[in-house]
Length: 313
Image 1 (cartoon, rainbow, N blue to C red):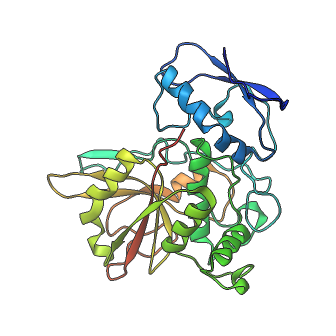
Image 2: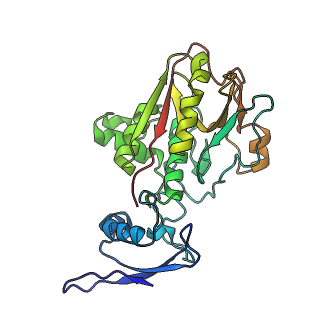
């Protein structure tokens, strides 16, 4: 066992957490003090302690492996379902499907290498949480999927933000007027970058593609993102929003295919229906989206939001 003590005269509660980090053949038990009522602030107070433990046990210095959320054999805790509480499309009691792309093979004939999202995510889409956002909430749902990835990789314990929370963040930042809160207005990749920075402390890169027909020429750059950062990518710009989960790219021929997670799905949490309806699936340039119409419009511009993996423990 490793014990972390709070020095001084103040008495604080401590709790034992049990971990099984990759590469260790045994469990590791750590006693963490409760320094803050808020879990997220408490995690920040313990960064230096976790850094020492990572160094002691030879764990990666840039992956969260010993946060309380990484612990095994813990009972459910408040908010652990990812919900944000209240209405406005932020979680509710729905149990979202995870990793709905698993089992889908890249299209034949391309060859090359496939590079996919690293780690689990939740599929967030229209009409979840008993909240009707059909026709305007696709970028919000893509953002929720991205936030679920950061939660499941244990970079944060914050709940997945509701549509209202997302709008409130933008209004507080001064990017939108107060009347934006509670509206049915669209947002795009730039707004998502503001929210990820403010809400999760996550920075992002923006890849701008002037024409949809040029997207295949950026497949190598997108593949590099999945190989290094591994986070889901939001596709926005002049048309509908989607989430990108991976790329297949042949560097000899330039052929590419894209693993698309479509937030416009309005049905229930039915994996077979989602996969058969290509609401998640590999798409070649020129293919249609699941709801009909071209996935990448030839003369439309696109912004790809590339969330960066925090260098944190």
